[in-house]
Image (cartoon, rainbow, N blue to C red; front, side, top):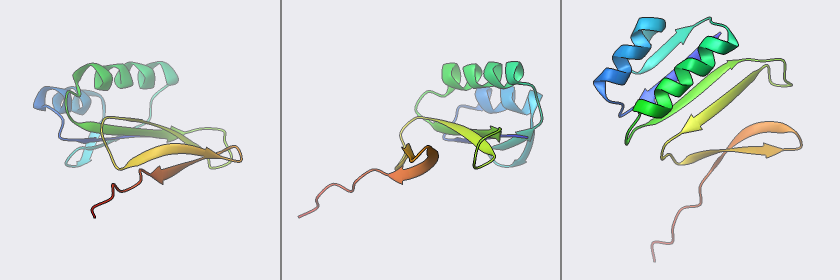
Length: 96
């Protein structure tokens, strides 16, 4: 299983993802492809994302059962704790 979520992505990138994957909600694409195709799709995201942000998650033989990559500006960042990949939040800047 493969899931790609795009936010603020250009229409041409969204169209390119829709060729390979089923868009189940706006910007949420799902499919089931090999590692080679998954890597190709991520290259397309990297090349075409511009100012948007993206996350790709897929089934993997890990403790959690999946792996993921992120790209672009977002409040969340991947973090590893005791060998498990989790998501952490960037600290909020002082407002006082």
